[in-house]
Each structure stands twice: as structure tokens, then as C-alpha cells.
Length: 69
Image (tube, rainbow, N blue to C red; front, side, top):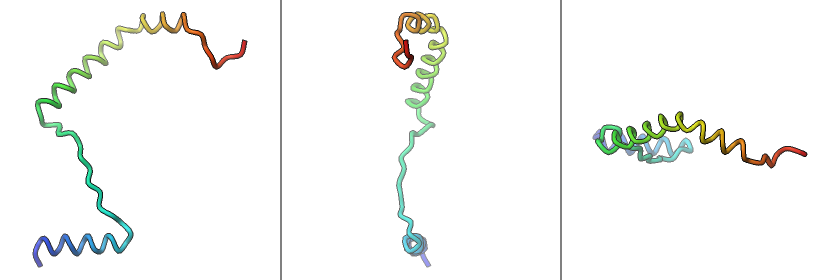
């Protein structure tokens, strides 16, 4: 039995059990572009820790809409 025949038979059995094939595309973590984007996002997260004063100011001047007065 060839590889193609085995795969075909396996897929036939799985379909008979009520399954269907699904193809999923994910980022290739081995690329230079992925590494660059990961570094960029990491730098943004690190900078977010330093933005706490800004958020505290926004929270201080914001009006809560979910509280009763």
C-alpha cells in the first residue's frame, strides 16, 4: 500500500467517524520577520510598565458609569 493510499484510507475512516480535516496556518517563528515583530511587541510591553502615571491620570479624571450616585 502506498503512502497516498494509506492517507486516503485514514481520511475515509475519520470521515466515517464524523470528523473532517481542518488546515491551520500559523506564523513561522523561525523567520527574521517574526523575530523582529516579537522584539517590537516586547519593547511596547516593557514601555507600558512606564506608562502607569499616564493611566493613573486618565483614571483620576474619568467618570465611572457603572456606579450609582
